[in-house]
Image (tube, rainbow, N blue to C red; front, side, top):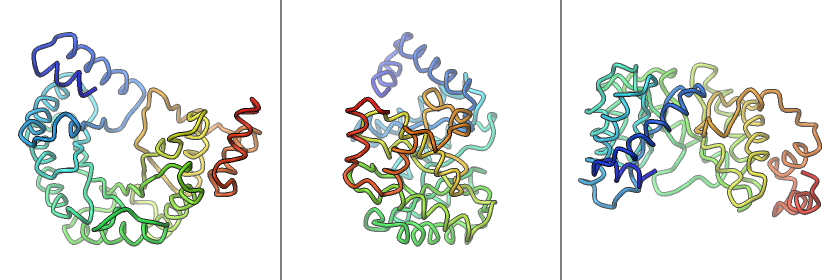
Length: 269
């Protein structure tokens, strides 16, 4: 995707056509926002800013869905918001975190909604309690700026279950706790496909984890809508043998994913 953006900026009509087709394909699947991120195009911020401005211009010429302006840099987010003309609806800022709280100042300035993450000031959370603690701190910062709860999307951070068997429940428990504390108005999301990184049958794992996340109170996700059917996930039976094996792993009952991998090698998934 970065190559297509770089080529498009250099005048390639083929690259522009590819990017436009990607936008339309995701919109056809019913996305609420479409994420625009150019951070990996260069390590030089002027190049990144130019790429974000170019991409926002391209996007709003063809899209019908509001953009999610996504970067680890507040300056790049600002540049993208400045280019957005607002005709597609209120944009989403992705993301604000304790290490860059000033990103929240852009929300009301640009009539935006915002993703806040559960990252700490000095690193990633190690359990569900730290996720909730960090998320609450960000929510409090947002409320100080008169940002409505309904405009806040909390990314409680999903890490690969292949790394640590607690990573599934760390996220799921944090979702349940935050939902209980803040009610139905706030949005709770996450990069749900991160959970399956490094494992086979990722689509199965992602579907089961998304179903578990919904059951615990998540109402959205950062997903590829072309690869993910929410209708199929909602209809998923967690008692199905394959789904049950994946769920057992995701709930922390299968250390090092041993039983899941054995089932995969035995063609039981």
